[in-house]
View 1 (spheres, rainbow, N blue to C red):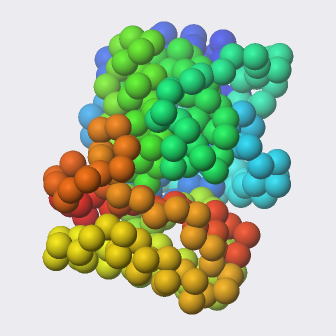
View 2: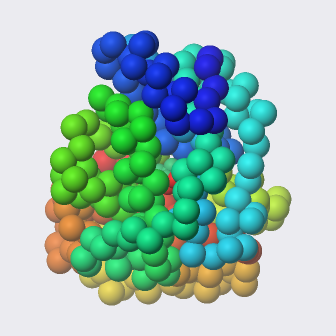
Length: 279
Ligand code: PAF
């Protein structure tokens, strides 16, 4: 496995070796089975797989969240090598942002709702770093997890608007045995918080069942809010039912709807989602 910290040597390497399909798996490190499923998918579909490991300061609206974001470089490298990843790109912040960036992205309503309401500027920072990674690696296909459903919609828009010549793949959420969606942030949970964190997924499943049974969304929202109110160190930020295309509130149960949730478990903010037509 080749490891690059600088852009020019990575580009030179790719120019020589990347003669056919290249898969890119962008990550912020602290890797888990969810990330490894993206590497596995990329390996099946490409001759070369590049994984980027970069904690992107531009997408953190909360400096404490950036500081506390888990950084596990050595275990990450071992996991990637075992998974058969070909190339790791792990730049320093100064490499990706030579000067303080003045470029921002505006996605209209899409980056103002749901996560955007609670994390202003977050998606602009994601779009900026993902654009840089696409320009640097020039992948055939880029792989992202469904857990960040809204992020995937933003990146879809980015690719369409800026005419990036690549395919995007949204890969299924990988869950722990109790349903908790795998996330780098889970390792910040203490034992009791880890147990209670499963409430996000349990609430999504309960809501889906109630909606499919014909329950009104207002009543379902009340049930979910009550679940969270019952636990003192959990704080629900939002639970919404949205159209999978534009993420605007859905008005009926259809195949094109998704349930989205965000909550604090102690100091750790977690998100999850569930498609109405699939797991
Ligand atoms: O999903 C993530 O881990 C990050 O938002 C991404 C796409 C790697 C950009 O920093």
